[in-house]
Length: 132
Image 1: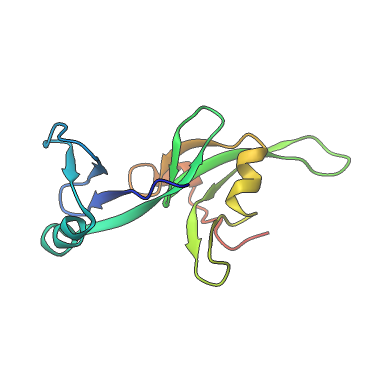
Image 2: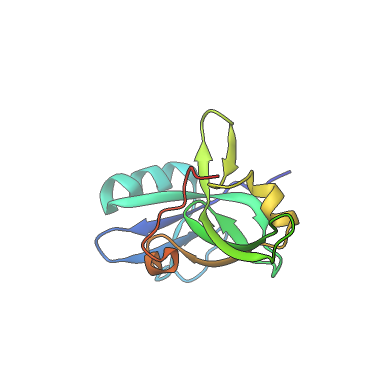
């Protein structure tokens, strides 16, 4: 069963808060229950990003808004390194990227290299969402 947890980007303070299920350091970890998460979103101008339930090939948890890097193998050509963003798709009812379903990229050895809030330069000025 997948653990349901969130992290939140504070658009005012430009930092992340991670979901905790114990009484850890409250300076960096803010949430104790789902209801409190919703209260914090209203009070702190937070953008919620859900844990996908998957980890990359290095064991890093993958959240919405993460930037993944993977090797794309073109038939008859050399592998190319590509980056994409993890998003929730209402239509697919799944976490997806601009290239494939998220779980397929994880199988290919994708790694988290950053996130859209702290590392937008990793996309090289190109938004790869919804591209094949």
